[in-house]
Length: 418
Ligand SMILES: Cc1ncc(COP(=O)(O)O)c(C=O)c1O
Image (cartoon, rainbow, N blue to C red):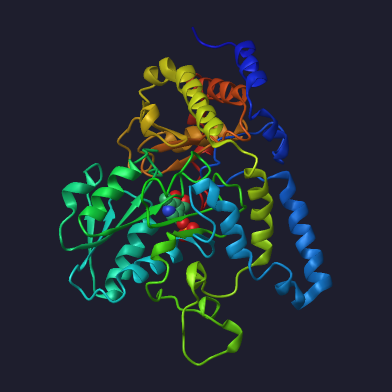
């Protein structure tokens, strides 16, 4: 029996996370299913940015001694519990792209080329593969691709130095077994860097228990840090003092204000700093991390699963009728997103209707996104989505499909960002 509006309102009344929704500044009449791309704005973020602006105005350069300078370490400490990390093991800085490059260089420094291969995952978010390629090219490594869908263990050999993997895959939403794979890679004498872009803030992550030594991730998706918010990197404490990282900038120096001629890395996680960061960006993120300190991650995970199940169950028959494939993995093997693939119509300009369906939904105020080729993605951020939102979103999708609304030419026009 499909759930009624009354049923889902009752679920909302019983939801222990329900009160968080009012702590986000969401536009009226929008159902936001794109928190896996850019998270919604915590209400406290704009006040925090305004306060930073006032501090810049009044304190001028002294602001750097009033919390700006140590923001990468301070926010890393606040983020650590969400990742199963200890204070001093996480640094909030730069982008995933930069952080991957830094870690690849750091891990392989001084190893010679006894292990000449960097292995990255085919079909992963492109920047991970591009950085593995760029690093290999300039560092004299061979870049190998783990074919999509194949087991990591089948591609580990004594040549492999580092493997780059996503914890939750950005397209399929598949969650990898982090503990088992980390064990396999370490047993093969290699290292693994985990990309947590789609798992930090989407589900409980336990880096310590999984034996992880290196990870990267972003804060602008499920962590709601704002557009272009700084990323993070994790280096387990016992792996922190092995050498240099390749972007040996002045703020990663042991004494940046000594202005010495030669580089000497800072001790601990601070050596992964590069150049000057933006305190404005950290202010918005810090407001969000303060809110995250109140969140019970087990409750987050169980609500994410309930919302996804509700969405899929409300759509199942209708998707079949329209030939749409639901590629969402089973409960234990997924992150916090749903993936739907529209059938291919064989036209080179509009091979499937996925893009147009997402645009038609956006016009109705239901925001998801589209990723080539053919994938409609819907992210479920439990802090600001109610069961009623999800029920309504499914209803809109049923109507868009039933009436062929998405066939209107205006839904084919593409912006730069899809
Ligand atoms: C899995 C994954 N890695 C990396 C990135 C991009 O990272 P950045 O732009 O911070 O370098 C994304 C962006 O969506 C992503 O989904």
